[in-house]
Structures are given as C-alpha cells and as structure tokens.
Image (cartoon, rainbow, N blue to C red; front, side, top):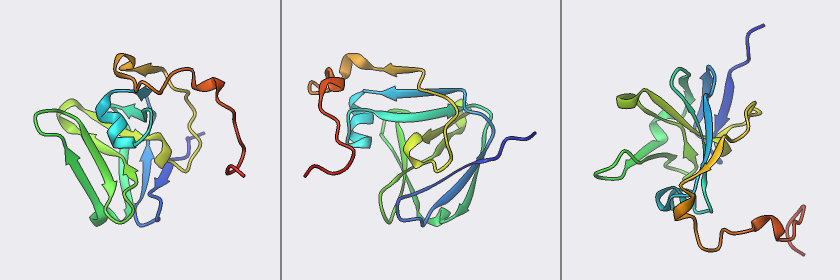
Length: 136
C-alpha cells in the first residue's frame, strides 16, 4: 500500500503544499540563527534528500531569505510569516518545518543539535508547570 502524501500549509492558508517521499532525519536545532528564525528555543525541521515538494497553492506568496555568506535559509508566507519548506539543490536537500505540516509525522526527532549555543533560559524546561489551555 502506498503511503499518502504529507500535506501542510501556512497559518493563513494562502500557501499549501504536498510532499511525496520519506523524511530521513528530524532535528531540533538550538543555534542562534534557528532561534531567530523560529522566535523560540529551537527550530524543528525534517530533512530529506529524496522527497519531492509540490506547491498546491500560493507559490507566489512564498519569500525566501538566505543569510549572506552562509547556507542558512528560511522560506515563509509573505502574508502571515509562517515558516515553509525550502529546497537546497546545491546539497540535494529538502528542509520542512515540522510545525507547517497538517499530516502526522511518522518519525520522532533524532537529536537536539547545536546545544552549545542553546539560549541561557532553555535549561530544564521539563520542570516548568504544564497548562492544557491558556493561563487563567
């Protein structure tokens, strides 16, 4: 039985995509660039050297920023700013922000990476109280 394609979209729904193929790795990156990209403690990206990305709608809304002098890139919706997949053909890689997916992800993160540059407040977060909804 063939696996159903993986689907995703931006927050406003203007950009939708489909991915055919498997992800080979899933990393939570704590480098300062990924923290700035995500606005959080880390980025959560899936990687594939073989999967194919198909833009279903909104391709004209996609903007891509490449940090000068680096391979660091980020694609996003120009309307809502949501992170979107991008290809790095020079290294044969598709990078997909895990949070952009609507489909379930069938792999767990492989590792936290670049932990030496982790934010100073990102320590022992599992000890912080958990609330199922918004704080009251």
